[in-house]
Image 1 (spheres, rainbow, N blue to C red):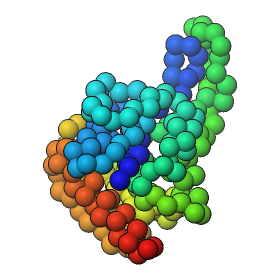
Image 2 (cartoon, protein in one colour):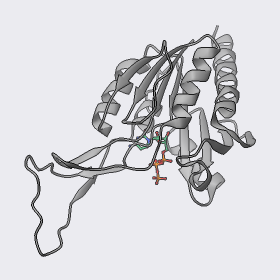
Image 3 (cartoon, rainbow, N blue to C red):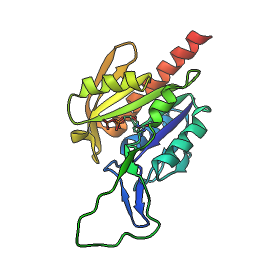
Length: 215
Ligand code: CTP
């Protein structure tokens, strides 16, 4: 199977030297890429800026902004069997990007932010998609309720929910997996590499079942 995996943060420029971003390290997405590769799958990794070395034999598409990530994901999704959108895409970007460095002044300044496009939702809305669509939910509270809402609103097959107070920038995480049919599965705290192997097994099994059903 071919896995498309998005990982890491995006950077939304304010001016040539400044941007808005978040603390995502990309570790979970890179671990999923490595696990998928180890299990014999082809992997396209669409990555925002991270400090990680991508696994060998993975096709890497490096992006920076949410718009670049949107384009890259759409370009490769059709050729994939499983799309795992693990990236922490910025929800807002500056309405205008200053072409020159904004100079310091004595008074405060405001930056107008506008929403970015939701990549996961845009794939979920494709009526004829053939790939399994997996989203992540990064939450600090009401984990299951918020993740259930994302599963429904973004129309994906699976949402992998995690509490960012445990998983952000660390090597471990604890996951709650929500399926479209209402089933849930909890995976207790473990290194991201172990979790990644579990996830890849779940995704490929479900995609296999879907394909068998369609035949
Ligand atoms: N996502 C996306 N495009 C965006 C924002 C999020 O594709 N512009 C995807 C993420 O890759 C993830 C899922 O949507 O798979 C949920 O991301 P998350 O940050 O948890 O939720 P948001 O939709 O941004 O909602 P909120 O910030 O209100 O929790």
